[in-house]
Image 1: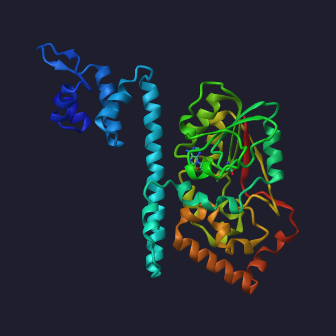
Image 2 (image 1 turned 135 degrees about the horizontal axis):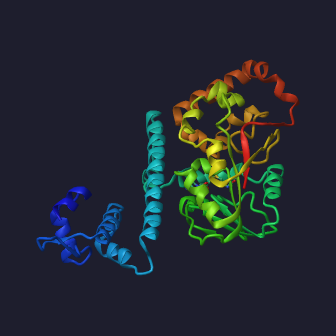
Image 3 (image 1 turned 180 degrees about the horizontal axis):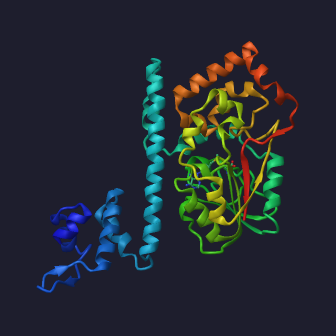
Length: 365
Ligand SMILES: C[S@@+](CC[C@H](N)C(=O)[O-])C[C@H]1O[C@@H](n2cnc3c(N)ncnc32)[C@H](O)[C@@H]1O
């Protein structure tokens, strides 16, 4: 018992208590006749301790670990999902604190409602309310995605958000972890399950195709999420971003000249090659049309004034992720360069282009 307590980082008293209430009973015997933890007891203890750390009460934990329909692997999936959700909430709270600090720094009043809102928020619960102002299906990008779906009849849309790019002529199931995003799905949209990509609550091979659009860079574990898509569907279609190309930050004037911090946002993002490998995919370039209807980060490459508008930026998570200081500096510098003609002098070549390759890639497996 002493050894297990030390390994698990809890007191012997806690283990005695769990034993007394029947939560985790050491079921083996040592050669000397002392009671000891068998491998299965250690598995159960680990589950109990993680659920406890996640804040579940002892009675709830007893119900969770005592569920005869749930084996260790299912518990690990559930715990993993709960932990990722917690990390997402912590990120969102940091974002909310940054925003409040900026507001207070400017002497602005922060209402009691605003102070409380940050508790329990997730990144997309924080920023998702601004999403529908500019984010919608672009027909040219949609045509590329729908073409890649092939003859699939059943479609799983992972990180579905408000439902952009969901094909109307197939049977769609959506997966979306953010309550705010789920709440903005239009009436009549496909049914939506509250879950994360990293542990999809579906049997192997449940769908003809699993698709994911502009979401993989938000996942805590993109490779695990892609593996899950591969597991639950015969075909996988993912619209993501290429950071393999040397000097990829220089593809787009916005990151090259104004927001170099974007590179740090994607520092832990897997290479395109690793993502393609995870699902056995080929990669195709998806150019961004000059008048892209979906207000994604690269959408306004030929309409630079758009980035000066707060509501346009709020629907792009990049700006929240780089933080208010970088945002303010970049927007200020861009505004100055637009006014002085410097932006036009540097980027004059863009005026005649219909579409630009800014790193969007379609992985098709
Ligand atoms: C930029 S939005 C894209 C939404 C939609 N696919 C579209 O194209 O409009 C990113 C979405 O990914 C979701 N997301 C974040 N983490 C996720 C995860 N681990 N698994 C699945 N979706 C996630 C966010 O809540 C958000 O709705």
